[in-house]
Image: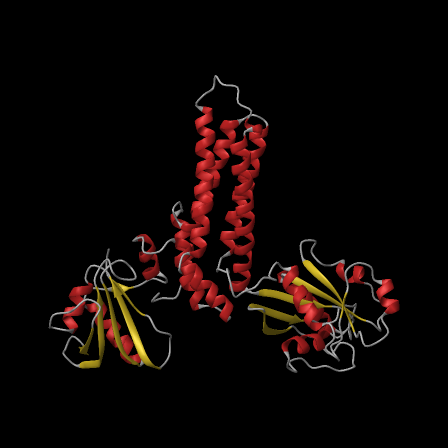
Length: 443
């Protein structure tokens, strides 16, 4: 492959800046900067000069010989002072010596193509860099170490064994075989179903750790939406007054619940309004509702004229929601009786019920697990792939029940291919381009 180079450290001034180089001309470039013998995995102090011999900077040169490197190719790292000007001058010199500028994620892509990482591990590299919490960072490290991949490989082995067993039975067409009553098929199918369910739930949680939750607070004016945002954020982020319609724009605040990043969104009170500014705020509130993972539908205990069903009428059917009754320090008997179904009583004034509400938010979104053990990072495509595998398995089971073993075996083959897309054993080139283009340049 051709030789690539890029600045591997974050943009802007810093104490140290790193340029990373990988490819066939790496050793040649290293020798242009350091005339003496270069030792693998040893730091060499060197002066780095331009084509005219003028010193650009001085620092450390580290050479990693293939295949013992991140990319599996010869890799060179130049560590100098973190001056953006000096780094760009040194990078330009690397281009003159035969390298080209790396595409976003190209170093990690080469690690994948050279079998140093599978695709799930490669994605975990980017997840670790962009982690928004300690729990997300820990989960990304677990995926990078192969924990998620090992789960997938386990399922793949079970799936392959089931498919092999069924296809072996198909090879004896003269024998009367009731596939729906075969003990091995029943046992293996049940085990596969259970394994997929567990891993799919863990992957869904991994997505939450990576992407976080988008939670919108909706309700009538003066229900206490801004007070709830302030209480959960533990800061006076939103202006709170007794005047109805104080909040006229969207206000967002980032918090962390049990290691899960949560974006809280305060919105304008939902009502009919002739005020042009307030009406625009209400329109924006509906826009946020369409983006949300969860809606907190809030009514004050003193607002007997409002009903949850009326507020929820404009919500998408697929949107999860929690009904929250604020101002529990007031008399609640009448409101509790009026509003049927699950109801979370809180008081933003006293703090009553807020801890329980936080737990309900996590539970309602499938994120109420212990983040300290067993979590790994995952992406939406992984969850979608696992769901597709579950569907293929269910269809295969129905074909077996109907006595069509050949069709069942084909569904299991499709399930294998879909599952292999997670680790990259079976992956389209356009998917690889989409994944790695989202990485940092230099990684």
